[in-house]
Length: 204
Image (cartoon, rainbow, N blue to C red; front, side, top):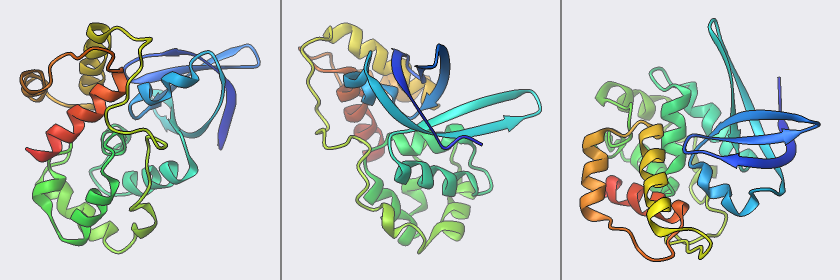
């Protein structure tokens, strides 16, 4: 029903943003909302997908049309719901994701939360040869993995990042591993921590 929304991003939380348009605040679930930190309190355009279930209506948001299209392909795979699709989108290594599908690399695919062996095999079956246009898609819009933002407190950003990982579906055990590997650093942004954490989780 909705293609996109233009408005002011008023709040950013671990699993969603609030974007105000024409006096209404819309709750929009998004992969790593902290990627939009630089747009907080500013005008932004977010592409939308409306998910309607018997007991809920949710809006999912995307920074680009390409990201939305990849999300739509993912949720068409049996066993992949919107939350699992967001967890996949949150990882920067889209080229690695596409290559894993092309190589039948189930071991790589089951590292994503909510993706078991059967679902990973279904992803390969449904999407192999159909994702070449997404290989170089960068959800960070040019930001490096270690994004620095001197406006954020290191400890606060670190804890926000851990909350965001939980919101994406990663287990307490996964987050414990991240905490042991990734220590708070001066001037690291929440987005930077999330990128580093996701990169670490996909290597293990």
